Length: 100
Image (cartoon, rainbow, N blue to C red):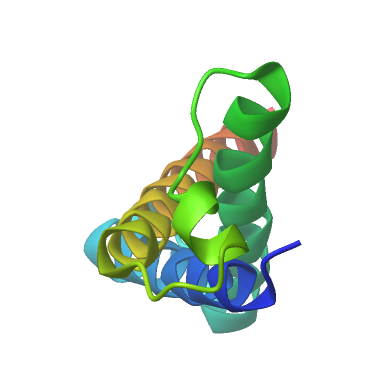
């Protein structure tokens, strides 16, 4: 397991969740909620495609001990996207359930 890659991915997820929360105030879960959901979304974005065999985000260079800037950047971006998307979906579901 690439610890640095996971930390970078989690940081992207936290930023993505909070960024989506500040842009979409209607769906925001608060700072802590946005961060937690962003972290979960970043892990989903990192591991689900890898487990399914669809995508490998720069694992070869990291496994060989090399410094892979593109792998880190893709981990940060994918974590941010995963965190932002999941935060928006959870906020939307929360708002739909609150209307009932």
